[in-house]
Amino acid sequence: DTEVTQTPKHLVMGMTNKKSLKCEQHMGHRAMYWYKQKAKKPPELMFVYSYEKLSINESVPSRFSPECPNSSLLNLHLHALQPEDSALYLCASSQVGQGSEQFFGPGTRLTVL
Amino acid sequence: GQNIDQPTEMTATEGAIVQINCTYQTSGFNGLFWYQQHAGEAPTFLSYNVLDGLEEKGRFSSFLSRSKGYSYLLLKELQMKDSASYLCAVTNTGGFKTIFGAGTRLFVKA
Image 1 (cartoon, rainbow over the protein chains, first blue to last red):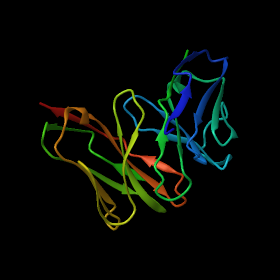
Image 2 (image 1 turned 180 degrees about the vertical axis):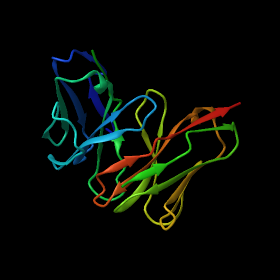
Image 3 (image 1 turned 90 degrees about the horizontal axis):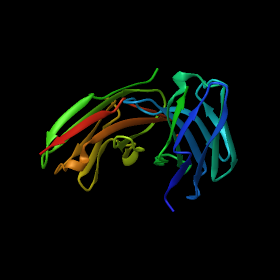
Image 4 (image 1 turned 45 degrees about the horizontal axis):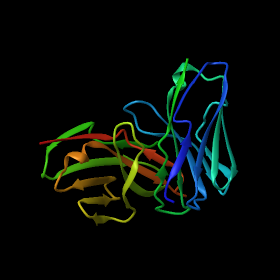
């Protein structure tokens, strides 16, 4: 299984809602990532987990809260988002180590109203 | 700081060869990746360079010069399906922090 899955594919939420994005991989990868991608822009790193511990937080606002409950799952909890947070949210995973390619999921298209 | 530059767009003809350049300035360099991203899809891995020189993989080759902060992706025998964005990405020491360039949108015409 060389796939990273993400749910939901699309999400529309209001600024007062609480929602979660989910990501799953079964490749035995111990590094998992969240990226945000706006239209016609490159992915921007948000968070990195290594061995289920948060190792990088790229100064992301606290309305985004990541969670890695086990080595296969990665969640992104959303609360009190702003319209400018509307974007494609990509999850990726990789082996831990130099030169490890990242495998990306298809993304969740988020719209904040 | 970190900076990655790529041309915004390129156009090439089916069957031809195209070279996409990438220049970078980063701290703690630990390798350079090229990813392909079709519109509306996730990026997929193409190549990785950490030492100077050329890496060849089928129709795709990637070159790195660390002293010049320069890489290129070479695509041969272009096919229509190669129309996509090509993202140059640099990782820092430790390998987790990956910074993507803005990407080069390649249009392949018949």
